[in-house]
Length: 396
Ligand code: PLP
Image 1 (cartoon, rainbow, N blue to C red):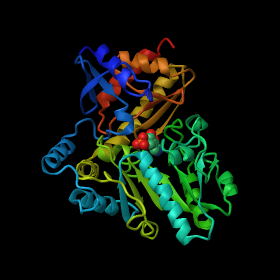
Image 2 (image 1 turned 90 degrees about the horizontal axis):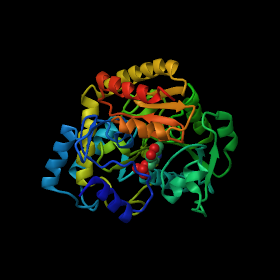
Image 3 (image 1 turned 45 degrees about the horizontal axis):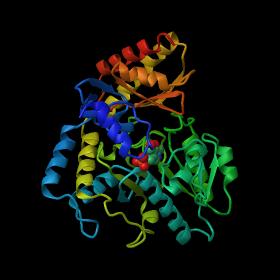
């Protein structure tokens, strides 16, 4: 079937929740993707900050192959060996004492919201169930997580939303403390707002949020779905800001492309989840857990995180040079390899031109180009991406 026919068949049969670019990508290796006709693209989207080790990383491929030949799925009615190993490795390398596995970022946040409410109902003064979240945040598309998301555009048409969420501006400690009431049980936020335009926290903001939560006896939940698993140069973003949360949610890069999510928590919080309180048929199934275990082992045992920090600095410094020459660039901001280029114009046409020139980037919130290449990206690949971006921006 020709690519155009294939895309038309997709449009006819798949709900139109995504506006897709006219590309059928069929193969990937490292930072490279190939379309159905064999044309190569440099991938600075990485499946939306998912393929942190690059496409088809050998260790992950081999773990999934081996697991697929042995056992796909048994359910959580039984003990699952790779899931046990994965949980132990996550606990050994994080603030957490316990892990709950699920399948996506929204599901991880949904689990965290339920965990916070259950904890509040059992351990806090009666009547506490409300979470404070941030304006411009993004936490997912289920009914509770889209309510937690502080952006009306994602909520339109889905009323009545879930009760028990309040929004305050990001980076505003006074507003946060002022919003705490007798129903508040916790604060849920992204350490760096990603979908909201790559918004970096002020220097002491997250320590301030931790302090407010401690003084008011509230749970601090960090959504690390996009920033976690090495994206900003540390395994978890909270490490970068010198704080310990009570709950962290993960998904995206956890399985390097294999769908898997997780809720990590301290023991005193995790223990309110008992048999029957929360569940997921596929959560941490053998295939997903094998993929995530292999991914985590590579992140821990290889120089990937170090490469992420070095290449992140290099990319930002090259973009700063570009910003001097190209007036369309308003600001470059980011941490590690989570980088946003705010433009003075709509980013959509730029993304399309980059794709025509062989570079995949995407645009968030209309005017921010997001660069999230695999963390294994090389200096040469960054140079090539910048060459394409420079030429696309030159007459803008
Ligand atoms: N939380 C954050 C911070 C995200 O960036 C996303 C997705 O972009 C989600 C949650 C939702 O994840 P998923 O699409 O896997 O449900």
